[in-house]
Length: 279
Image (cartoon, rainbow, N blue to C red; front, side):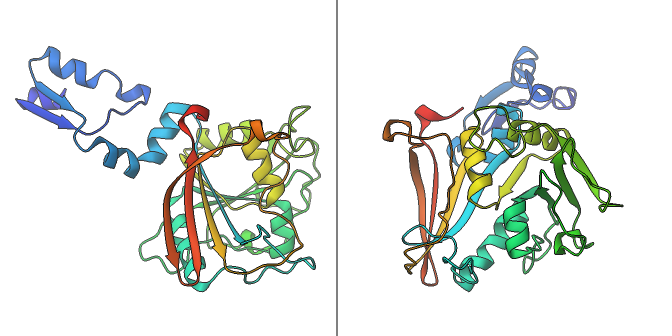
């Protein structure tokens, strides 16, 4: 309406905003006699705004799953040690991903094994994301680094979890995963994303271990995968992805590789689900 009242004669835009609040804008301008053209550098604009566009289209946050692994797919050695599989360059790049996300999500396994901090470091002007711990049994220790004041933190637990030790912590109670889900002992991923969306979260960086990653894949809630592959072999240890409701080759989640980059000795591979499998 402001453009119409200002007497603007021509409007050019890249991609339409699919959110309900923005719908009908182009039609309103055309009805008022404004020359409207869409699609200018649409592919480039779509890539830059992928998180917002995906969130608006699906009604949940855009999810980027990040992991670091050896060339044989191990995220840790047989003894549980994992520092450091990836290079310093790869780890610095992860902070860039964190700075781009509204929330960073990990599970209780990663929390207890690594005690991650999850705040952004080394990125000038970065706004700290919401740190989300998916911890159905509320096993998080009060000394966990994610409970410091470097960034806000939300702990998602089961409805019947004992959280008496989490005084002063923002706790979110969620239903358990539905029967037949890949991770039946965990929380409902769809419910988690709905709650985060309601809190204004439009993009999520999933840094969880194989169990949580498998639950997200099973729920159809991974929009982009970024794998940091280190030139090393372990031969044993946990894989990057846990049970994801996939039992045959025909059910495999096929991906299109959109970028491959060298980061020090590592390779960073970025991929998205093929168009035929997208939500």
